Amino acid sequence: RVRCSTTKLLRRLLLLALIAQLAEFELYVKAIVCNQRSSTIKLFDEFAATLQNQYFEVNGHKVYFLFDTPHLMKCIRNNLRAPHKVFIGTDIVDWSYIRELFEFSDPFKVKIGEKINIESYLQRFFSCKKVKFTAQVLSESVSVAMSVMIALGKLPATAKSTAYFIKQIDKLFDCLNSKTATSSTTGKMKYALSLTSEHLAFLQEAIKFISCWRFDSPRQSHTIRG
Image (cartoon, rainbow, N blue to C red):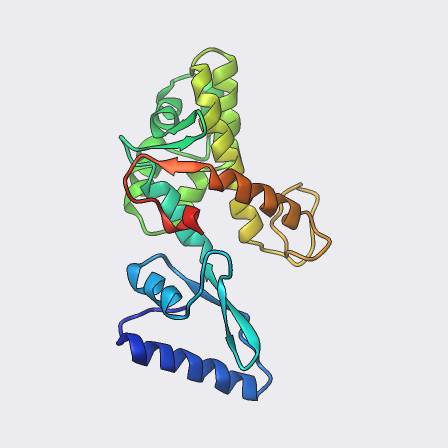
């Protein structure tokens, strides 16, 4: 993982030297995992990487740049802060629907979302650096709870876009955050990606989905720009 506090030239030289030294022991660096700080974005530019070719070469070996999964979640979280919204075509993803869901006193809702306490988790959702609170709010169980409340008429039909968005983010987080080497019976993609696994098809669809996002701010996140 790259943390940038050195000068631009020194940073670039150190990274190239490290990659070359590892290659001498037949340890080939395949990717550099970065957060979305401006300094790491500058590093991306310094190596002449582009959105179409997100890699550079060291002695003929390609080294790719990747944004880490926690910062994918943090980016989404930060851009959902009220009054901000995410626009996907004509659909709107609105944080207010998530808050409204947990403010219901309906016992059926409480059963579906029983793992989450509204005040503690929604406060931590925005203030805590730990990604687990974000992952628990942007989860399949919350998406299901919203869909049920929409069907019961307790949330408006316009909340469907938010429920679908949460469901897709939960699947994307599972896909990029594998925990086991092989698939399980849960139906989730929490296992390692391979050439024959379902991950590749899902990621192709995810690229199309994310490319349609537009945050209601003048500066679009690096996550959706590539």
